[in-house]
Image (cartoon, rainbow, N blue to C red; front, side, top):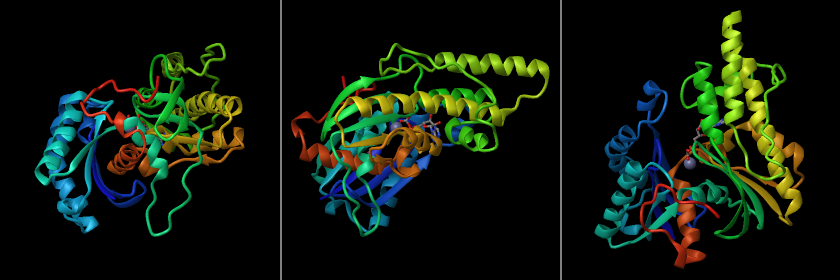
Length: 333
Ligand code: KG4
Ligand code: ZN
């Protein structure tokens, strides 16, 4: 079964063709650069950029897959969570295509997409599917959800952020350090030149629960930067490395605790922050179960992960497929 899938929830415009929920036939992604100037995403600008890019990207995805629209079996799009204007552009485009081509439309929860990115592969040889049940950490620009994936499309929420998301913390600290946007990859690069133990930063302790909080950490970095500015130069690599170590330890500690508490067979990561190599290493150090993480380009937003999630939506619990666009759709409760 071939699915054409569309992702426009934030600032990446993506269209892919995915076979049987796993094999990437084509996956075209354009990251919007209009937000570099503003140092953050302006929702109206994001929506307008999706509108401009989507049709050429869809044609390119079909061309690279050597496929015609007639030959796909269903058309999917992210319907939430995300920026409402951006979501509407992608979902309405995909619905229009589906109507015109007389195909089924499948709405996809973007966070399920990040989880199902772990099922994707490229090339001829299919790697084994991840084992379930699993502990899954979805860390992106807007979410930091730790969930128990009991079975396909059955998620139980263990913890989430009570303030900023992990990616948001990366982006804000990168701005403080004058590194640019989006912050995650820039912090990771700067951290390679720095000492992760140069500064001790606070870790919010939420009394053994699985929730996280990053606003205190962000404020501590802000104070430190202001102090260091008064004294002279700000050692951005040391600050980036210390911040990255602290946030990764907070996340990895919770993942390891959940993996020990629940009887699971694997640990999985998803979302843009999962592209961070130091986070994988920190989790590998603490967890002995198999760890699955998509390759970095499938961690950040892309159409293929939506095609994977759409396939598994049709196969499992198909009575529970979201159809309407909702900016606040959750992964689990
Ligand atoms: O999943 P994603 O592409 O979009 C959302 O659904 O939000 O995640 C984007 C977030 C941004 O905050 C970005 O700074 C962060 O993921 N990110 C990273 C890395 N690459 C992207 N954070 C840490 N390390 C990275 N290598
Ligand atoms: Zn995302």
